[in-house]
Image 1 (cartoon, helix red, strand yellow):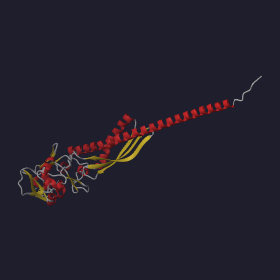
Image 2: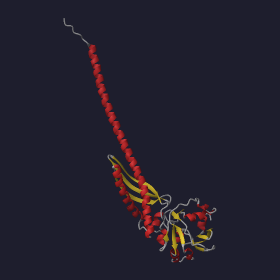
Image 3: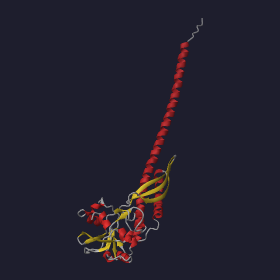
Image 4: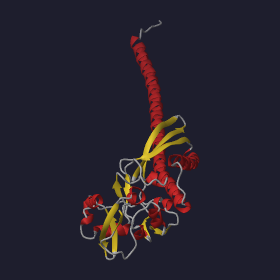
Length: 311
């Protein structure tokens, strides 16, 4: 006799197993897709971080190369004794050439394509800083940086060619401009009284910011003597900014610098001549009276500069 079993439990068990298998495959597919998504997202983050590092590093190089560009331009002005005709145009040309070389270097190092173009250089809030504006496009694979960036550079320790550009026959050494007869002749041609006091005058060659601030403390002890000895520069609304100094402009509308032009040795006291602040010597030409700041050394100061420096 044939016995037939109606095994409903077997069908249910088979169904449960099938559901587990299907669920397993669904979960496995989801996990694979999620893992792929996470890896893709991580790769994108890594790529973005890599581009961010490259961009930040490149911007630092713009700051360095901006200083190198100013140094090159100022050195050429000092050596040739020819003023820069258009400092903005010259700066853009020289810096663009330097950046073009840097772009090739980055392409070889990081496999990135860089397009850069210098837009401008202009004065900052302080005369020792300049603002540099550059268009920058950096592409690496599917990532891109595209922006006009603002960086700044300093003029500290760069050469100041102003006196050499204005006084034909002046010379220089590592620290000073040596005027010999050139400044006396420059003043005499402008009918300045007692211009002979500036025979063999000297002035600083390198931009160094005066640490004695507020300036009124120049009247304390040997502060003025130390300032003059070190050839420090001071902020001045009347003095030329650095960019205009490169163009041989003894005055300009920008917030700039002033420094002292030192008359020759062994002048007696109670003398007068043009005030020794450089923008007065080279442009405004108003008189000052002698001020003895060291043994046998004097400068000429008008009342406003005496007040400014606490003398």
